[in-house]
Image 1 (cartoon, rainbow, N blue to C red):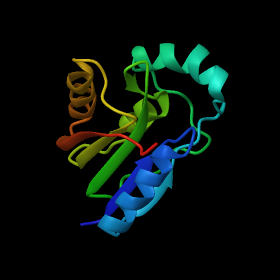
Image 2: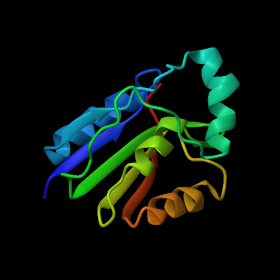
Image 3: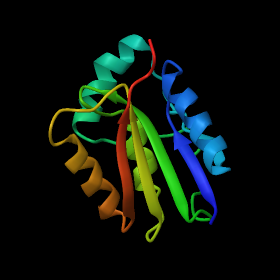
Image 4: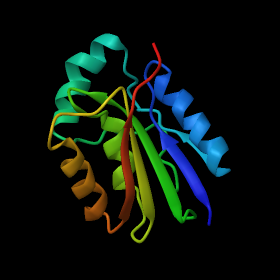
Length: 137
């Protein structure tokens, strides 16, 4: 089974978890980079509203995920929802792929997991795991 770890990280916490996941699964590591990068201000001003609406954002280079049987998606939580690049990656998932989701910085409010599950399943994928992790401070 060929595995990819696909992630977006603004401050580096998600990157650390993604690297650990890639090592643990002997997986390819793919970083998502928005075409219009976020900083702390724009993450709050435009990123949080987009996260709440589960909007995707253009990526600098959309990864080709068609060669993977298993994909692990990681993203930080913004306004109790995965950051918008997560939605961009979800839209690229090939049907039939098994997917794990790791949400970094703690869980969202109730209903966030249900929304993430529905987003993954709309792509025709099987969600095998959805977990929240907190960075060490």
